[in-house]
Length: 376
Ligand code: ACO
Image 1 (cartoon, rainbow, N blue to C red):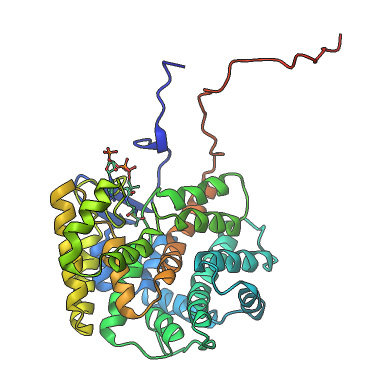
Image 2 (spheres, rainbow, N blue to C red; image 1 turned 45 degrees about the vertical axis):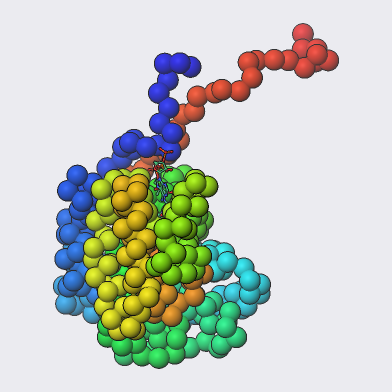
């Protein structure tokens, strides 16, 4: 056993190729199908980035129009999904609601077990269109509010906000939301995407892979961190309290949510773009106190530990300013990452090998049941 090198958490292990995205911690860059994510966020609607992740190229005008028309035609929450959501306790975590709703969509799809590329891309586009309605309705029902029907004249980002709040969003807000969706869309072999690829590698259906990925994303070390950032902000209260709060938190060896990353060790490539979006929201809502708390925690923590913010750090406060419940933050991440997950599911299925690593045994030596008499 001594000569076996264990790679705990698969840290540093390269398990396969991917053409979907490239994370480069050396240059602090992230490319989707070759395009820097910052350029995509500055120039593209989320719909075009979804197309890029699935098909490898940005859409032509006609291709984008077809995707947009399909997305708008599929935005409505199906009755059976709405009824199922209504059966879930109001205090259930919204990630459990989304996981259940996606599972029901899968169980109701007669083509669920058709694992062909074409069929999987149809399912991917359908989940992309349907997730905002699930997320929006769940937030509304927790406030005792009824469903808001989608609007065909609004783009993906505007309509998501419309279905959640019942108002057409200000362009500043819709733009920041669009940026966040693009930044959250894809990030190579992170824990949830890898989960989706493991499930796909068994030749299970796309919905099972997505439901598994939702479970993996939920944890606070992964997607659940955007929610956890806001809980930390609530605990700290004001910028002047950051120092004493951090003294206690670090003495208790707490992880400070929204900081650190398995791959990036000198800052997350997505943070500067999301921070600019957050700044526009701070300006729009006049949220100086929140901005002061954000800056103070970042500079204190970075100077004490040398650990930098990840995407969840600016996105959590951004969603808070937009009016989303803290519990809704990670489901928004699902609605964005469905594009990356499904691009990876299609890629995994196209050149599949069952993912089945080895383990090194460190339990008891072989032993026997005293009363056991072997057959002769
Ligand atoms: N707060 C305090 N200490 C930290 C943090 C943090 N956020 N992140 C890392 N460290 C410390 C660890 O305690 C550890 O210290 P030690 O060597 O003294 O024991 C050291 O830095 C290395 O940390 P690991 O957890 O081993 O590093 P790993 O690469 O496994 O962790 C992770 C990455 C899980 C993201 C970690 O940084 C973390 O827990 N961050 C908080 C959760 C978070 O924000 N997750 C979001 C990830 S990005 C995303 O999903 C969009």
